[in-house]
Amino acid sequence: MMSEYKRLHPISAIVNFMKQVKEMIIPIVVLLFVNGSGSGGGFWRYMPVISMVTVLVLVLGAGIIKWMRFTYRLEDGELRIEHGLFVKKKRYIPYDRIQSLNFSEGILHRPFGLVKVKVETAGSSSDKKSEAELTAILKEEAIQIEKTIFKEKERLSESPEAVVEEKPDRQEEIFKMSGKDLLMLGLTSGGVWVILSGVGAFLSQFDDFIPFEEIYEGASGYIRGGVLIIGILAFVGLFIAWLLSLVWTFVVYGDFRIRLTDENIIINRGLLEKKQVTVPFKRVQGIRIIENPVRQLLGYCSVQIENAGGSALEKDSSSIKLFPIVRKREVENLLAEIFPDYSVETEFNRLPVRSIRKYMIRAAAVGVIPTVVVSIFLWPYGMWGLILVALLAFLGYRQHRSGGWKLSESQLSLQYRTFSKSTVFLKKNRIQSLDRQETWFQSRMDLSTLRTTVKSGDAGYKSTLRDLEQKDMKQIEMWYSYEE
Image (cartoon, rainbow, N blue to C red; front, side, top):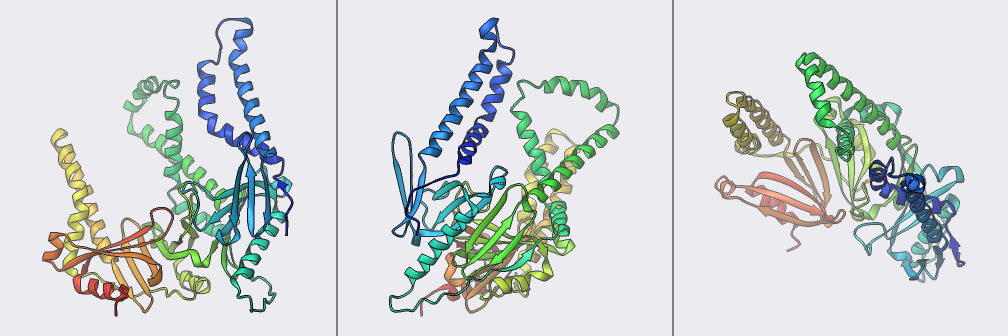
């Protein structure tokens, strides 16, 4: 067992420096624009550059000091971390609180065989980040730490009389995304809109420096020249954004693999930054199959698991993408291999026919008010909004057709649609709350709304199915109740 104090790899000082610079990038760029040319002559002309260099040197110095003062060790059943310059901070994390160690390899880590380790616990002291983070240590050392912690946890969980039998860890790869899968993921994801919104948000930071109004006035002459130019420019812009989103998909999800051990699901992904996420089976609270309309048409879907851990600033730590994209016909076999205690239902009890009108009215109402307002000010062109109302009503119809539920001895399965279709599988002992709601209109038609909550991240994950028969709702409540 390791007991001596250890330091992080010196590259962590550079990682800390770059992290601080990243957080300061907007102020630095703005300062350069404001003082770019400097004022006056001689020494004062170079004052902005000197100030910038001074700040960067101070940030680098802070990163080096942070590295020098950070130590860690394994001792007496705890991961012990000590850090801080003027105030020495100590954090001792008992093994039995540690749920998983997640590894990631950035561009700076990979040449030196290093990884960043994030320590996830059952009850984090902060809901904003991981319990602890080792910025850069050798990969072999990280694996050894992980083995030491979980072997010790296993030993502690055994009764004193039990004979601890050494057995090899199961390491079984059950899924790997192919290049075709990655291409399909990039083609059917909404990444293009993320790229466009990101470019817009970035440019909005410089609206004081970029003459958008002059550009618009200059371009308006061309715009008046014809719709064809606008169409070509829009097509080129969307095509470039689509190519960027496709490349980004390969960078983020390249080399995606899933391995199983006796207690964990291990997910690896990433080309530039390699990430490894470890999810203990006992922390999985539910399974969700998601089909957006395009993927549903092509026979593809994605699968997510709801994780009892997770933090607000850690993306994909509560709802984890188990399969970012997979053929729908393969899902049942894959999930049976990973979660043999779950039943992947395909036949559901559907919603009553008399609730179709409620679904269509509820969906169409979202577009009615904007259409009326626009029609008042832009008569008669605003009436084109009726097309939107009709499309929303059709969406309501599809939502009703997708709604359904199914009970088994220990599992509740729900199917519903907002825009994408979701199929959710929940174990009875994982459901934190099961609520029934009835509006005045629903009561008149003997209908109810079912809402379930499972632990996932900070707020939990909620599933809602509207307009069930009240007798069906009572059957589900009796199934969930522990009263004899």
